[in-house]
Amino acid sequence: MESPTPPTPRAMSDDELNAEVMRLQSQPDGLMAAMALIEAQNQLRQQDSFAYSQWQLQAQMQAASAPAEVREPDPTIVPAPDVTPPAVA
Image (cartoon, rainbow, N blue to C red):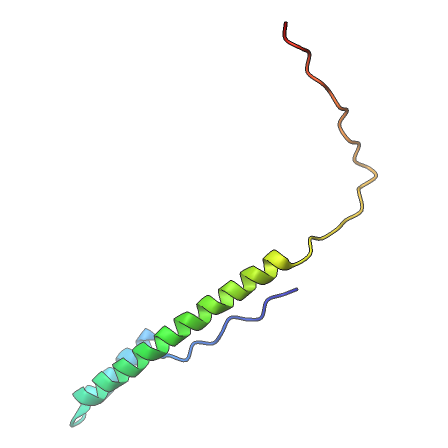
């Protein structure tokens, strides 16, 4: 069973966030808007991190509970003889 794809991050990337903060700072009252954006993005990043951790845990649990692949023995492989080491006197 394949695990689903990881959750898509909802927060901006660092580059996107930096560009938006720079744009906001050039506007009147931009500093307050930039601070609000940073706070909102921080909350989204925490949610993204939690969602990713949950996805990883679910994938690990699925892998651990998946039935082991059962294969027929390969007839071309000859098992090694049962050799008992000599007793030490």
